[in-house]
Amino acid sequence: MGFIDIWGEKARKEALMTDAEIVKLYQDRDEAAIKATAARYQSMLMRVAMHILNDREDAEECVNDTYFAAWNAVPETIPSHLGAFLCRIVRKKAIDRLRTNTRKKRCGQEYYISLEELSEVLEGDESPEKALDDALLTEAIQRFLRDQTADVRKLFLGRYFWFCPLKEVANSCGMSEANAKTVLFRTRKKLREFLEKEGFMP
Amino acid sequence: MKSEQLLNALNNIDDSLIEETNPFQEEEITKPVLQVTGGTGKGGKRKMRKGILLVAVCAVLLFSGVVAYAATGGDLLKIVRHKGTDGDGETTVEYQPIEKNVVPMSKLRGEIQNAPAEIKKQVDEFNAIPEMERMALSTMPDVLTKKFDTLEAAIDYIGYDQLNFPKLNYPTEDVHIDMLGCETADGYSLSTISLDTMQQYRQGGIRYCQTIATIFTENANASSAMILALSEKVKLAQEQRVADGRTFSILHTNEPDPYNEGAKVLSTEVFTTDNNVVYLFHISYDEANRADAEAVIEEWINSFSGN
Image (cartoon, rainbow over all chains, first blue to last red; front, side, top):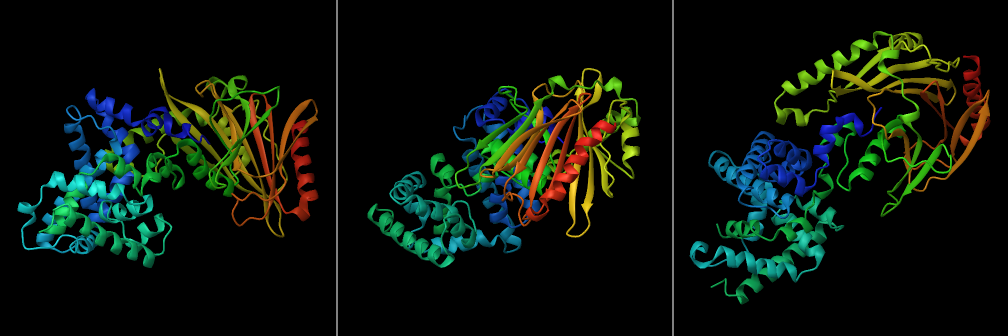
């Protein structure tokens, strides 16, 4: 039985395409770009969406919307890291969908747990829309994260960007759940202090 | 809302931070492989092979594949160690390039001539499924598998008069043919045909041996070869035997292969070619029963002489 060939030349090519090759397909407006993107990133995108939405059907729709968004975006935007570019889209789409869903029903546990944990970082009376400039906040968070160790970054973003359950993210960093919890608590505290110092807090 | 602001700000962080912390990195490029084997990941071919390997070795299966084959000094077996980062590498064993061993489709006179049409139908049906649903399926539309009650029925189905499939007098548990279809200028055809049998050669502490006859047609990739994948550090011993003018390349594992989880057995693979058909024999055995296995190997080798 063939071990790679079994997929046929075409499927194999799509599965093994590099980011640059896939982006080129988008630029050429070749619909094979969607298939190649799915072959390479579908599994990852589904997991990101599932962590936020906890609903397979919704997650699939978000992933489909992500391909569509990428299709529309790429002629003008050339992503340097296709995976990160797609993750950012699917994450945003999943969060938007979750907000819509929440009006009807509370779900997407990991998102809300992350939200609750982060609520201690930004406190104060002033509304964040007024107090914070999103771009500056992103830039400050990046600086903060780059000053942390690789493990802390992985843990923090694993939890708050990728919305992985605590157990999963602890495992991926080779930590116990309790240890990961402590590190996250300390990191949130440090982030709060950092943002205060940077003038983001009243 | 404030924490949402933070989560939103995180959405715009640098690509490099996203990539660095991606917990799902191992799952990129997985889809087709997941469908075949039940899972693997980026890191490409090596990991893909390992995933397949777990299935293949457990099922005592060998498979042909596409490799860049470089014959070395007339050796029939090419053994390559692929080092992993943590003992997770593998050893591949490649047997003969196929350009010397092609059987044209026109030489196959059995019902197998209908297989391309069946595969085409499978592919058409598969393609009719919405793309997103297709991706979730584990179907391999371009592969057709046929099961048979007897070895003779399988041989008749292929209808190749030069197919000298070794017949061992042991209970046969599974006879099937895997056919890999491909598109050609004239429509659909077959590129690889594997007739596979599993036989129980010992009753107490059941042990199996397996023979796979593989026919590469003119549609097969010219660089294809038989490939066996084992774990990185498995100890191997090679030998060649000649019987009745035919060369047999033999590979013994000198200790149980860690890939073969739970099965603390040794194994021997025998490769040979006859009338452009590539034959592979696999047998597993306990250290204590090495002599019994050796007798079965000899029986298999000698069975070619009787054909």
